Image 1 (cartoon, rainbow, N blue to C red):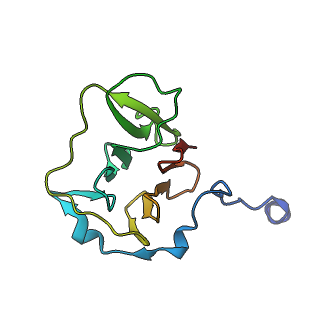
Image 2: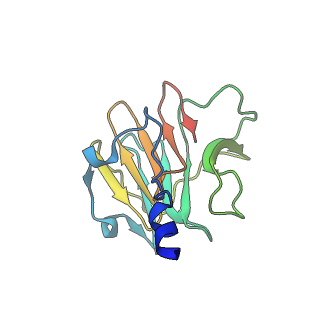
Length: 154
């Protein structure tokens, strides 16, 4: 009987990114070792405005600062940053905030060219045309898009 019940159970569904999220399969992977910065995996956008770290913190999520297209609803005047809204849990969505002070770029971070992607332990980030930077968690449930025309999270 247990076999029959298992066979009739719905199969788990894979999460899908929002329809307007870039197709990460359309980007060419770079060697993550080329973006190692003293044990951290970091990259800059081609214009060197956005600085991102993959596999950051205890839940190995993504954090980026210097982001363009900050929504007017984000208060403050400090460095615009996107990170997990709740770092205590790995399944939190991302949120755009402002930190105190100016943006600081990591030690020896390299720019990543448009059309490329960097795959970390728990996320993939892509760099596209027109200053696009987009990152998504490995389970495809949470991520963000950063661009001058308007940045957003999910």
